[in-house]
Image (cartoon, rainbow, N blue to C red):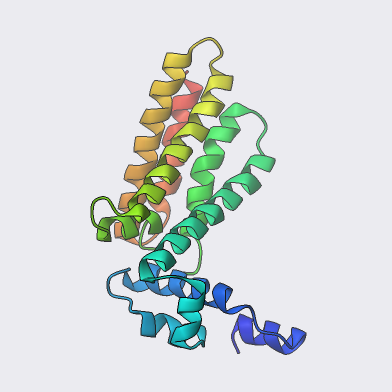
Length: 201
């Protein structure tokens, strides 16, 4: 019995169709890719009629954008949880790395395949709104790192900005390698390299 079936049995209610569609899209888009996943696959997995999908999303592109937004919010939740345990700006920077490692540790159907946002963006055409969502996420991650570094390096805004860019590149490279290798080891190594760099500032 799935987690959803157990929840349904306890409450007597199923999750709303929109939530089930987004959950199904998240599983299929991450496991199989955006282009390879058709509407019929998503509606079958969500257990809803095709009309229900179009009552909640205007198109597959709209569903893809909702998936990207949800994945961004999911990552932010992981980051905020890590940040609550941070004891200063150095830990704040490392919380960003930890949040990515936490995302990599999820129980994915076919294992970890790298950043779900970048994977989706790679399939979308230039100019697609979904690519803008992914770009905004990556820019926000770099801004979060920069904000912690500005606290760590008061009066040195150029150094904070340059170091934030350096760490963002380190993080993205680690995510790409971790995705190819199917586990989070590269992310843990990147965190260690980031910590060493922070200790030398």
